[in-house]
Amino acid sequence: MKDYIFCITNFVRVSGCLLVCLLSANLSAQEPSVNAPTSASSWGCNEGYRKQENECERIDVPVNARLSNTTWDCNEGYRRQGSECEKIDVPVNARLSGASWVCNAGYRKQLNECEKIDMPANASFTGPVLNCNDGYQKQGGKCVKIKVPDNAYIEGSEWFCNKGYKKLETSCVKMSDEENNLQGPDANQGKALRIPRAE
Image (cartoon, rainbow, N blue to C red; front, side):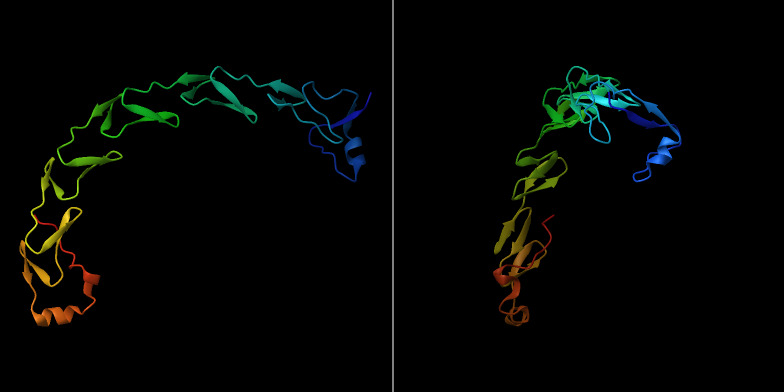
């Protein structure tokens, strides 16, 4: 039977200086623990086991879990609760997200449920955020149509004067030749100056 050397506490086996270990070691004829593959200089535990001193201890994997290196992780839809995997209760109008859940678009979390968000006309959701459609802007809890003056166009939730026009309160008035010259031939690349939305 092959001999294995195990150094006592506070001593290590030094490569190239074996005597350092042998002078303070217990010579053992024991084989490494079962469930452990051997190599010329060391051993490690098989899959499903972990090293515990000179033994290979079996990893207890609970129901609805899987091995992960020297431990275990819960399967999708479950979360760790002590030494078990607890099923994640996903409410109606929600979906799994990691070890928890999030509400679907158009809903918001209210305690352990997903509550429907009242969506006004001419609005839509981007994830959990409510946005007014193009041509509309938020006013209170509604999306109201933006009033676009003559010689203007709408872009998103704002309106802009056409090229050659400028904003005057809530309308677009024609610019003078002098003002046009100051703007230059390539001003705004054929688009009007950006102005705040109408209030």
